[in-house]
Length: 231
Image (cartoon, rainbow, N blue to C red; front, top):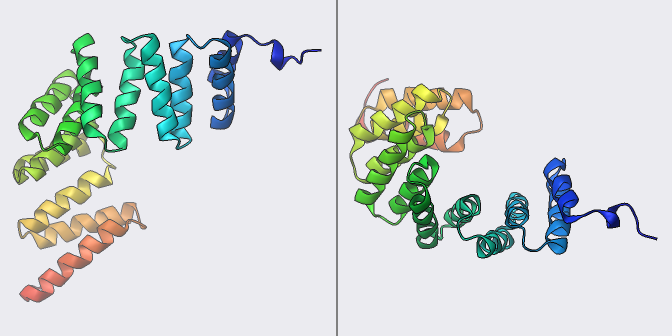
């Protein structure tokens, strides 16, 4: 005699996966769904997301690829594939994914932002600036795009422009300690040690376990002492 679970259809397993309270149940449910209906790209995509959340990146990538084999224009799976590849630092492959998305929808700000971040990592700075600027044009409140533009300008040694970008991040997200930390680093490079130390103190106050800010602050204090500067 079949159990209640054995009677479930692919669609019912898919629904169970969407309603699951933890990642292991999601994986089990979506796996059952694709076993019963291997031609459902959405089930493969959701299985990929669950596997990625579990830290199983390679298996997740295989699922996103499978979803795209079924439906080559499935941009959700294409975005997830690009993101997974980007986070694994497989930037050339990720670039292709985001470029494909933008052929389908040139107004996808998230794809423009991620494409720009990938291009930044590939040292395609001019292209990266255009891509991230396009993301900001689509959504000027995207703090991630402003942050990435700051990273890019820092790499290009356009420090004043980088600071403006990080300040924009903080307008949108006042508690973004990464942006604060990066402004402080630039201030330190410009010799504004007191301002930089003050900003690192603010980061440490917000995040007492932030070892990067503690290290950077100590480094600047040593620079001040070496210069014979007084606080």
